Image 1 (cartoon, rainbow, N blue to C red):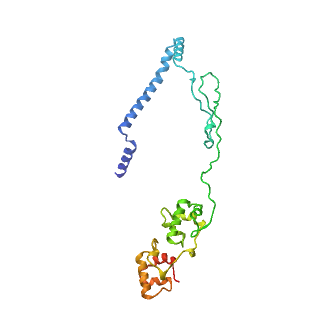
Image 2 (cartoon, rainbow, N blue to C red):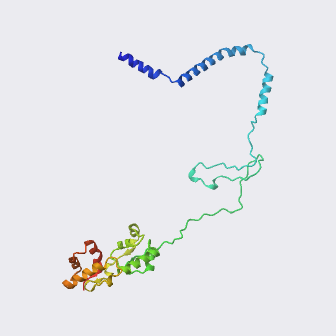
Image 3 (cartoon, rainbow, N blue to C red):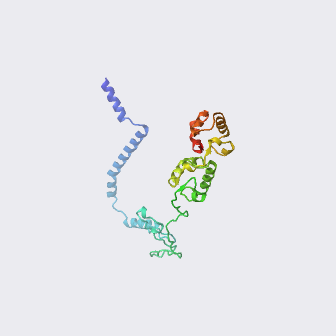
Length: 265
């Protein structure tokens, strides 16, 4: 019983047709029958009709040829662009011939000759002159010399000198990140041409430090300077820069910034 059901399923799967397929099979069978019938009876019809008027047939064929124009089209006024190069790498505008708008005379067109001389192409020259490689010291260089360094420019040089005057010098080139629109990628480009000598910084004396002396410096604030002054008045003069850590209000991150600008006489 199971085998018979499996056989029935296979028959339904491979020998079942949709309505469209059934209609196509019927049409195909009808065409096959029609071709077979015509193949069987047409030779007999032609054999029985021996009186064929060949002259009339020839006149009909000539009439058909007279109606249909089989001659090739000849353009009267047209641009011919042919002979394109096969290699796309060598394609240029002047790689194919130019033909003028001339009436068709049955002869080969002559190439068009321009009244303008051919343009001579010259190699590209940048309008920006390459700056010479100059190595400068950041704490002593002037604005004009700094602007001549590669990847710096006039605007950036002015900002650097202005910030240097406010800080009384630099101890690291990475302090330039505090300038607007400055990033580490740009600093890495001009860092080989700039040196920094922290010994040239104009330092503050801890034992004479006042609020007015650090005015405008971004690393110091009045509250911090006031605490350092009160500690000095209570415990006596500072003996080293590390003594300001004893105040208990200066974190290590702030100390690392202000320490290069402090000294003790």
